[in-house]
Length: 546
Image (cartoon, rainbow, N blue to C red; front, side, top):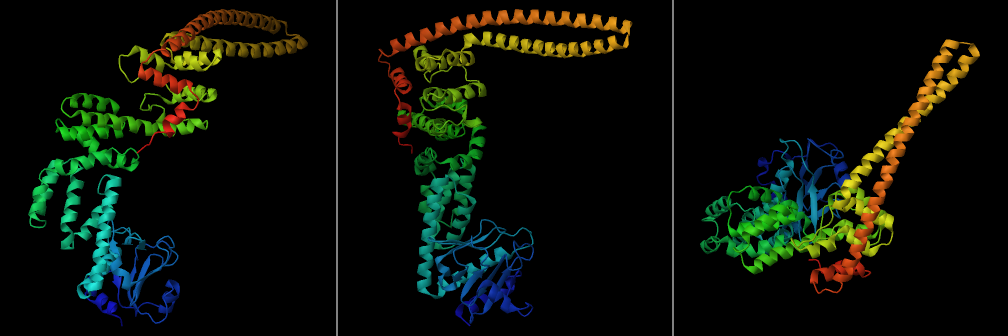
């Protein structure tokens, strides 16, 4: 019997769900065959979830022999091999996110799931298996210097693993919290874990909880470290701003949703918290509140911080719009949730569709969203606003008057009354046309009935049918007259619309000629993006997105 067998058997009475006696197991040889255990090894522990199994009795089971850990080979997604030598156990961190969750052996090269989830509250098998393996590790490192060194390297790697994940996720997730709890059981690692946990709590923007944590760590962590954590802004603020300002971290947006909600509901906050909330508002697409809050913050923060927030807003908007641009380049419609987005210059998906010269896509977009007339990002600058006008952009890019009419009718405020009137008249015309079609069907039926009545010699009924037919003909004539009047009115309105459109297109082209001669930096940039082939494409591809 190996040394592992003796250590595993110590305190076995504490584990009520693990099997240490195999006399009641029928056909032990079947287990050796099923789990591919070599001859010569002896079973020491059998962990089996009696309440839940994905496959069969062996499907959610784990066997520990005097040499190795085995789990069912059908779980090929758990690890490349279903055998882990006990001599390597100190190279792994044994953890579960919760007591009911999978049991993992985590190392720098592998993340092996050795036992599946359990669902019954009374089933403690996974929890006991994890505790048994951690007890084995503690006994090994107490009795062997090499095992101790190996385990310390494992903890050091695990600490860096959490640090990296913390930076990517923005918060200490349940998984990272659980790993830190295990690392903190080794006294040498307590200061590092304390520092990470303090930063994680600081990012929840809950001062009371942060103070309680420091109180809890008194006597557990070094006094000098706790003293340095009493002013968390000096310690953690810059790193927090840096991490939540990384535009590509999509998961981070989800992770901070609760923090954003509770902060927005506060009656007051510090300047530091205001900066954080500004950045979170950008992530949560709460632009109206962001603009109000930033206006309040202006004057209370340095110009460097002010423009850092503004810069993040611009980069964040641009990255989100890069997905819209990619779809439109291939002729795809943006997703519904993307239609209301604007990039760092204030351009919308409709601007993009016009610039990439895709008429079918533009027409679809015009029907899918209320775009307004188009406006810039510099409030009150009428010159810049005029360049953002969808009719202006279409006028300098297209000569197709039918297409320009569609854009003008859908986006110009001056065209909206005409558009509504034309729509109402067209609806009425369609209703009258449908009534005429029904009258025509009725006339056909009455005519057939009259022919039948004539053959049968029923003069009274024949006379009534004659009157009915005459009435239907009169009704159809009245419908024709009303439809003709509507058509005339629609023609007049179309003519008025045509005059308005031609005037607007002419003014837009004159304005474009004037703007091209000015030195206004924003208008020159926009005109370049609109008129120069591939300029908009270069605007995305030549910019490094962090």
